[in-house]
Amino acid sequence: MIGHQNMKIVSHESIAADIYELVLEGELTKRMTSPGQFVHIKVTTGNDPLLRRPISICSIDPDLNQFTMLYRVSGSGTRVLAERATGASVHVLGPLGNGFPVDYLKHGERALLVGGGIGVPPLYELSKRLTERGVHVTHILGFQTEKAVFYKKEFEALGDTYIATVDGSYGTKGFVTDVADQLSFQPDAYYTCGPAAMLKAVEAKFKDINGFISMEQRMGCGIGACLACVCHVAGDESNLLYKKVCSDGPVFKSGEVVL
Amino acid sequence: MSRFGIELPGLTLKNPIMPASGCFGFGKEYSQFYDLSLLGAIMVKATTREVRFGNPTPRVAETSSGMLNAIGLQNPGLDHVLQHELKWLEQYDVPIIANVAGSTIEDYEEVAETISRAPNVHALEINISCPNVKEGGIAFGTHPDTARELTEKVKKVSSVPVYIKLSPNVTSITEMALAAEEGGADGLTMINTLLGMRLDSRSGKPVIANKTGGLSGPAIKPVALRMVYEVSQKTALPIIAMGGVSDEMDVIDFISAGASAVAVGTANFVDPFVCPAIIEKLEDRLKEWEIEHIHDLKGRSWMDIGETAYHRT
Image (cartoon, rainbow over all chains, first blue to last red; front, side, top):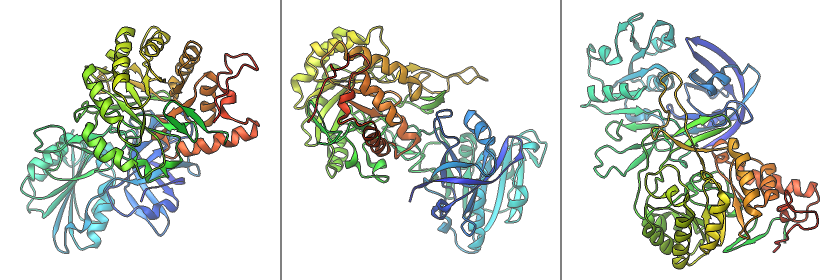
C-alpha cells in the first residue's frame, strides 16, 4: 500500500560520474516489498523544483528501516537533490507501481538480468531476492564509459557480471546485446531495465523466452491519475488501448506493451 | 451553516475546494488516500464522445514553479465514463462537475446532453480552452461569437447548469466571459492552462512531444488572479477559479479577487493529500481571522468596505 513520510537522509554520496547513492530511513521502508517498485520524491519543500521525482528502489533493509536509491543528476530536480545533506529529510510517496515477479523462477533456474545506465539500480534488489530463492543469476550491465560504472562489486557478489561500455573504456566495447550474443547458456527468463532502445533490443534478442521489462517515462502524479506516462499496448490495432507506466508498470511482461 | 457552505447554480458545496479537471482523473487514484466525500465537488477529466488516446509522450515537463502538459484529452469516451467512472463515483456524497470537450459543436452537444443526465452530475464545465488538441478545444474559446454560439447550443440540451471554462490565451478574457454570459452560461471556471513550451537546451528541441503544452502550477497564479479580478467586476456570473492554488492562502486570494469557489490542479501531483489539507487549514485560518463565512472575503480586492457581497446558505 502507498504511504508517505518525511524520511531522513542517513547517507548520501557520489559513487560514479553524476551517479549518487542515497540512503533514507523511516517506517515507510516496511511497505517496500517488491523489487522494481519506485518512490516519488519531493526533493525540497517549496515550488522549485515543483514536481516530485520518480526514483527506483535499489535495495531495501527492513531491519534497519532503510532503503537505498541510486540516481543520476540529469536536471534541475536531481541537481537540487544531490545537494541535500545527511541529516536532512525528503518527502517520500511510495512505494509506487508493480515490481518484478521474483517467484516466476524456481530454485536452480537461470535468470538473466540486463541493465543499462540508471536502469541498473532496481536490478540489485531483484538479484538479491532471486539469489535468496536459489535462482542462478547472471548480470549484463551497460554504461556509457568507465567513469559511469557503478555497483560492479555488489553485483559480482551475487552472480556472474559482465560489463559493456559504449566507448570500450571498460569491459566489452558496445552494448549489452553485444555481451548477450556471447552467452553460453539460455536463461529461463530475463529481467531488464534501461533506456527504451536497449529494452527493445533485449526484447528482440530474447523473443523466445519470457521476460520482465521495466520502463521509464516522464511522470506527473506517479499514481495513475494524470495520464502523462502512458504507453501503447502491443498488438492493439485500434491504437487506443494503453497502460500507465507508473501504476500498471513500471514492470511489464515482454510483449505486453509497445517499447 | 458552516463557514463554508456555498450555493452555486446546480451546486450545493460543503466547502469551496474541488480538484480541477485533468488533475484528478475520475477520482479513483485519490480515493486510496482520502474519502472523496470530503471535497466540495469534483471536476472530472474531460470527456469526449469517442475514446481518445491523446498525444505522444513525453507529455509533461517541469518549468520554474510550474509544469507543462500536453496530454491531449485522453479519455475512455462518453459511454465508458457514464457506465463506469461516474457510476463508481456515485458511492460518494459529492457533486460532480463533468468536463465536456469535443472537435465540433455537435460533439459538445451530444456529450453535454447525455452526461448531464447522470444522477451525480450537478453541473457541466464546457472545455473551450484545451490548448493541446488540433481541433476543437481552444478554437472555441478564443472567438467570442463561437463561444457564445457554443454556450447557447449546450445550454439548450443540458439538464444541469453550464459553466464555461475560459482560456487565458486571449487578448481580452473579459470579452470571452461576457460572450459566455450572453450565450446563457450559468457560471465560469477560469483559467485553463497558458500555452507554453520548453526546449532541451543541449539539442534545442522541444521537450514535450506535442512541442507546446499548457503551463500550470504556482507560476501562473498571478495571471489567474488578475483575470478573476477583472472578470468578476464585469459579470454577475459566479466564478470557480483555478491557477496555481496550493494552499489556503491561495484560496483566500482567489475569493478576495472575486471567485465563489476554488479548484486545485497541479498541486494534487505534488501532494496527493493537498485538497483535504487545504480544507482543514482554510477552516482554521477563517476561525483565526474571525471570518464568519468565506464569502465575507469575496471580491474584497475591488469592493469598497461594506459592499462585500453575501452569498450564504
